[in-house]
Image (cartoon, rainbow, N blue to C red; front, side):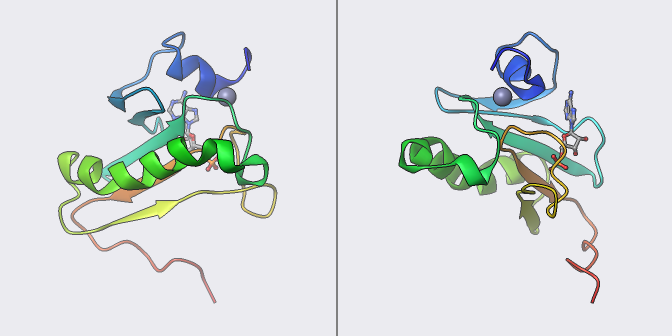
Length: 115
Ligand code: AMP
Ligand code: ZN
């Protein structure tokens, strides 16, 4: 999609702090990090959200999870991290191109959701 901000980042049309790239995925630092390690991994192909994912997206989605630990460790999250994919209104998704947040750092993260 030509006007999608994350597609533009993956194509190098908008600058980003790149973490990793291969034929399926692109990873870059979140512009507004919530922890010392906070980067995003996206499929290079435009997919708005997990609702639109299907079998054809499995190579990219699988690659994202398979790389998460290695990239997290390389970025300094050596004692654990959290992975989040926000989806839709209820999930408070802000950018409609699937992205996996990888969040970590030296300190233990807050509890996942308030009860
Ligand atoms: P979400 O609420 O899951 O859709 O999160 C979108 C994330 O994208 C937020 O954490 C933003 O800080 C991040 N973000 C938005 N624009 C950019 C950008 N140009 N470069 C890097 N991260 C971005
Ligand atoms: Zn896109």
